[in-house]
Image 1: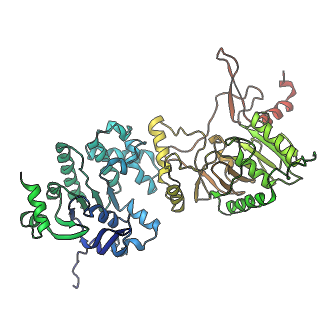
Image 2: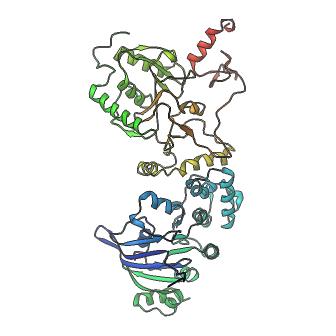
Image 3: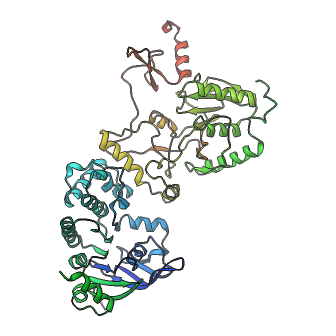
Length: 262
Length: 285
């Protein structure tokens, strides 16, 4: 290993178990997320995908196991051992979280510009003109007409709201974005354009993404690697193409056969 | 000084309650700008009329104190007159309309124009103590935000003002940061008074009865109004002087004179205005 620059995982989960009372949310999940990688977590409703995502994102402490995150300086910190202040700072600068329902991730009562600028202001930006310029640039990058910067998200269509939510998360140039069904509930053509934009952004910004979806088409378009979950457990893991072409586990076979027949 | 009504304990509240409020005040002074919960009592007046301020004043009053009460700067409006009468009756304390004679000044929405001294206490009546409330309705969340100094949201509001109106349109309850730590609501005082809060020699206490919170700005504490670098904080100005006393440096109220649309601008601080007029007898018509 001497002199060699070794690539280390950005996020590591080991033996993560989340319980809701006696109900199991997800059970003994371990995963590594590598820099620049898009990891899709697929499975049917109730399989523990979102629970796992929220746990990885520091929003739901596990009953057992740990989640480690590699900081920009190379040091590794356990997400649930940090102070809440530190975890929140991380969540609003280095991380992003895109909710399935844009209303959960947006402030619906303030303008699009303020939605995008909020993280900048939280990080101490105090120049109105600069915040606005930055917000405008991000709206345009997400294909939202800059003239609508002062409108509230209530006036936006579902697809625009989702794009706004993505812009709001990416404005601080995060390294890691968690996405929970980012294109769920959108019609197919809108979905396709958002996926296309996302793919470009992931590549340009070198983002690492944990993507939860029940739609294998979305996973195939965006993901490098896939985890298949069933009943709170990971039943199969591998490269996206490999799982889609040659699923091993019975449930993964069922999932692939039930969706990919066109 | 008159004798207090024997039917009541001194200053209305019982001694245990006053001790409880004093403990909250001491904690508030120790943590400038932090909202201390207290067991607010039912007072013989409706919420919104100053139940918080009255309880703080009751806990502070001694027999030697001289009380001044102002409502929108004036000594002679309903709220001021009734609270003054209340303490005259229940505590028998001396009252005054002159700012510099008072030891305790209870105020609804103004800081007197006459500079305060270290011997005075200013008690504010506060309707909604939480500056983040209109942006974040959950109390658990606003408390966490204060604890973690997570104040980005406050600037979202100011951003929104500029985006909508072209300037920061918040003119009252303008958020301040106290002693570099807590973002605090100065109660609905006009922002004209915000600079007076900074390093004021007097102790400033805030009581919110319905919301059950007390907070404080100790004497000589730094109070900074939040703003943007390219949209700095500024106070209201008027293009005319007070039409009664000619003051150009005081906060003016617009008074509608008749139903023909006639209006005049006069000092909101009635004591300040009256004194300026009596000092210039030639101007009095």
